[in-house]
Amino acid sequence: MNHYFFLAFNNLRRRKLRSWLTILGIFIGIASIVAFITLGQGLENYINEQFEQVGTNIIMIMGKAGSVVSPIASSISEKPLTQKDVDLINKISGVDIASAMIMYPTQIKFGKETEGLFLYGMEPGDIDKLFGHLSSFKIDKGRQLKESDKYVAVVGSRFNEIYKKEIDIGSKVEIDKEEFKIIGILKSIGNPQDDKSIYVPNDILREITNEPDKVSMIYVQTEKGKAEETAKRIETKMRKDRDEKEGEESFSVSTSEQLLETFGNILGVVQAVFIGIAAISLLVGGIGIMNTMYTSVLERTKEIGTMKAVGAKNSDILFIFLIESGLIGFIGGLIGLILGMGISKTVEYVVVNFYGITLLKIIFEPTMIFFVLGFSFIVGCIAGTLPAFQASKLKPADALRYE
Image (cartoon, rainbow, N blue to C red; front, side, top):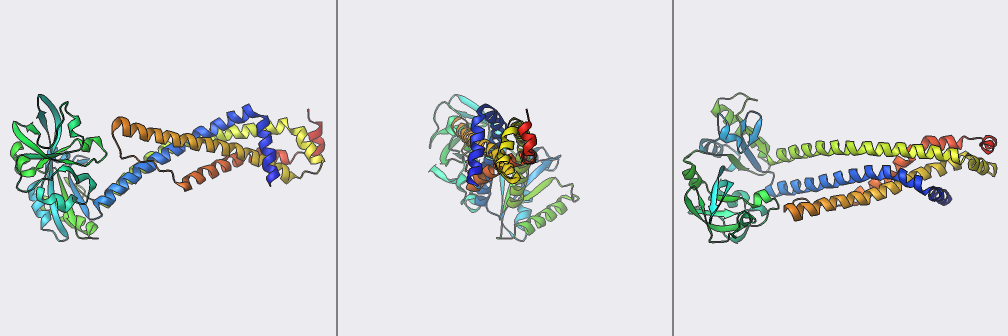
């Protein structure tokens, strides 16, 4: 078998330009596939990691406005979420705690600068119970909100990047003509949008907005292993309380597992589309290999005749041409793998250093590397099957007379 590879490799070296042009068609497709798979896997790993931290016993209730489901949708819905819904959910069997979160777009002034931002309202007494285990709510400096707090705020790790003057513990910002003291700075989450957030107690935010029942989103913690059935009970109770039919709800109830599955499905579809586009490039590369091998058969017809005349079998000729086409695919796959890994790492570097998003962590699994190389070799072999079969069937006398 070793001499087959030796002959095939020598044949490729003799036709360097044509071989490299053929390899080009393969490695572009492989590089694209590797880049899309690793980038998608990196994002999926982050999403899984975040949902693992949240836990499987968390339920999120959001408002609906038409087909839109989001915390903002509640404020524009005909039937927005209210504190009454929170009180109702807290009485449902299986619910450990239900807590309201409020989002409010407003102008926040620091010094002489004013910026339009989202202000988040939280129930201070529920933060540790619901989010105490999450890295996204760990305090880096200062302290977390307490139930006795009034006009104070906790900000994300990059909140001070919004203003020219640096904000620190003790700094004061103005929100709707009220002065708030910064008492805590959260550890970095990795998402600039979240890292630039500002949180205040719910009752103070309701006082500012003059909407005592305002709720944008409801977080629910259930008993372990009871999230699915509790979510169904919540949905049934809220539907009955709001006098709504099934399928026409003005709210959405989702468990963390359901949200993870939804994110996974969306990501899978996006990946499949991009990989499909890259596969077209790979198909073109395969056709290029086939064309190169047919040309090689024609050029080496006399050589094939000579080999057969001195005792080479049909299977020997077949293996030589198959391995030659497989090597073209393998070399193209190897270059494509290196290029694709380079593209992924470059994207990761740009995202982290220029956009401040540390969520994307590219990991190269050994199984993926071996699969790509094996797949490239097989694609090459398949593309070269017909030319190799044609070469093996040549008759020695006819081949030697070929001009």
